[in-house]
Image (tube, rainbow, N blue to C red; front, top):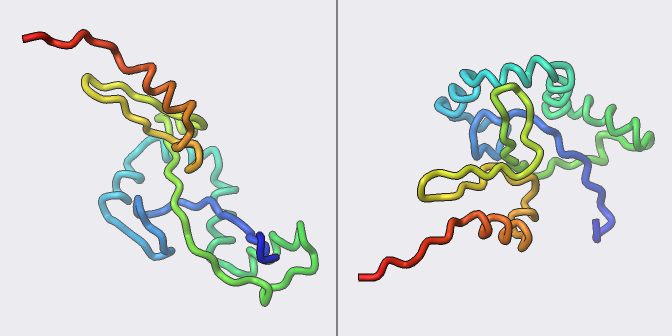
Amino acid sequence: MIDGSVHAGPNAVLSLKREGYHRTSFNLRDFIDTMTYAGFWRLAAKHAKSGLEEMHRSFSKRAFVRSLQKLIPEICKEDLVPGEAGVRAQALRPDGGLVDDFLIVHSPFAIHVCNAPSPAATASLEIGRIIAGQIPFREPVRM
């Protein structure tokens, strides 16, 4: 960072609330939606070990330090201060695969951008041009 600090992370863990910015954030409806979606269970089955490791590192400072020491051996727990949490929505297909790019869905009167791979990408002029190019042109109705 500009101030000389180093940011370690992020951990990729399941949030139990769509806009949950704290470890204890919970919303019953969001939790039920996740637990009843077959794609979640397919993803969890494919990546159970790494998912559990991420969760463990998220809740255990000792485990997080050990993982950092693989890259920076001299780091110790006193070097770390907690950072703010962020939430990144990630579209998940029914087969358990993650959608890695923009997912653009058309409905009769709207175009929906359902997955944005990074916050910066949502401001991309090129993506705006692509979406604008998908708007069907209609002649104006004359009265």
